[in-house]
Image 1 (spheres, helix red, strand yellow):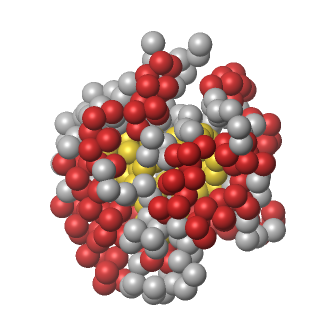
Image 2 (image 1 turned 45 degrees about the horizontal axis):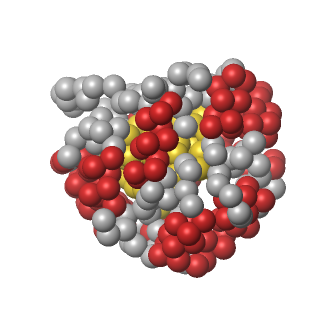
Image 3 (image 1 turned 120 degrees about the horizontal axis):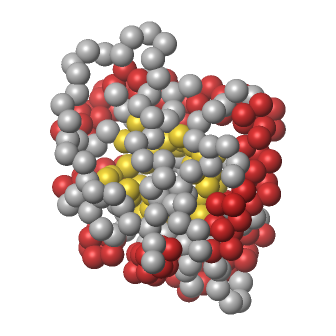
Length: 295
């Protein structure tokens, strides 16, 4: 079995003192600090913190989703608790959930006090924006990650953006990429579309590392239970956006991501790095599966 992406995280680095000088004009956000280390997405529901601490070792990258059903406080509170427990916390910030510039500054100050300097920026599922940020691009421009010394991931859709035509989606991604450190894709169930899409990105001058979105093994019962708790609307949008792939997850039998990972590892497409793993909060199963990859 390939070991291109190790299962165990590297040692937690000692914190370093940052320069007080802001980067100059034309500077870029911090790069993804550990492109060959997988990151694991969790939903800030009751009990998830205890599960992470039990099953994911210190130094593991853990991203925390943001949705109207839980609210930003749940995202930020969970991320801070994870950071204090020695995990590398990456909170999702949804543009449509941020009320305004003052609230954004307060949120960033709160995260900065906890040493959290990695974010994942999305548009979000809110039907109506809570403030001036209609989508991810507007929030990225307000964040100005390069000036703040942040590493920022953004979402991407190799199999088609749900709300934009291909040309418009590529241009939007190009503009967002100017503020980003890496891309993490929607859930994938076959390697071909991703490999082709990465080639298109490189031709368009987008050279960010790409984390393929991989669904961890999970039972149909868990997926349905999580879907109910995160909100029916979001679940239905997932089904629409991901198509037959999610139906495979919800169908009889079980989803095994290993063959897909093996194919991606052997594809050697430029800039495909360690995956963004959708855990569905099944941390015991996810940790056991990923641990087997590290022997």
